[in-house]
Length: 275
Image 1 (cartoon, one colour):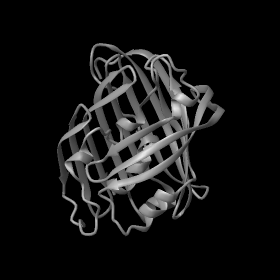
Image 2 (cartoon, helix red, strand yellow):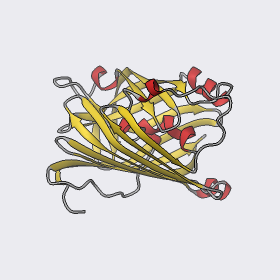
Image 3 (cartoon, rainbow, N blue to C red):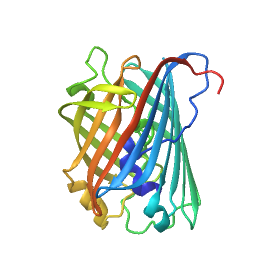
Image 4 (cartoon, rainbow, N blue to C red):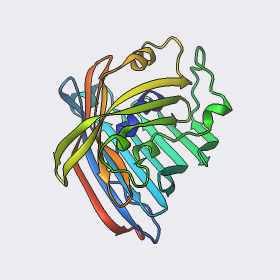
């Protein structure tokens, strides 16, 4: 479950429903977002995110679940969480944990990271379908972000938060099992009107590149690698000088999917102290 949804995470990936901000003494911008997930125009899920973005530390929590008719077919739920440090223009993850569950099983993935290097990975229960996969080497675990930390996209100091500097980047991601790249390029600017935020957002075209851990003969991996119909809208968070996704639209093998914020709120200078 987790490895097949990882490419959504930077936008996406999805999601957090009312998780608490990180603990700590310093004031932090707290970003809260709720998302609707739809497939071929039919709402199939809800997701939410809460991020505490402090002067030098961050915590991001996501939750996502299928709803309506989709939940009747497959009762799928996910929870993701990441912590790390922030410096101007740089996000450095420290911990990542995700739990995904359906009616048949629950799987938990945990990673410890330092300086963009994965130091330890625990997957319980472990994946067993390893045959025919592109091997993951130690080199693939260096210079990477976890899927939840990829939700935070720092903009270089001195560059505007809306425009090419918000988009133009490569995001190397490792989810504990699969290594892939997301390459964003600037496609324009739009005006967004959401509960809690109205203003300009950067529109980015996105390309997905599987690197390792994926099935070499996977139809879905080939489709996503050739997919030119992926777009993300990024909203600015001024004091932290980062952008975060408020809309992701992409073609899938099952049809057009959209993950769109139905609420987006930034609480500046909120104490990230007691929960």
